[in-house]
Length: 91
Image: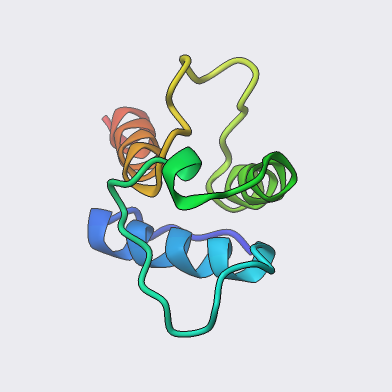
């Protein structure tokens, strides 16, 4: 699914939804703090890879060439990357 909406509130909500799709260990209804690191949340490496794959596909992010270390450390950091990238491309 490709989205054109890159408003930060929408992106954070969508990232939360994508994380819930791939994270089998998250109990239903448990809130995920967007600023918390994936490590502190207990997200394992396979879940993170699955999340980044979905984010890359949906928001057209090439994780190998377009990102810096730490760009995917939390939902907020990914959201900031998506919003910044799309605002740069729109300019």
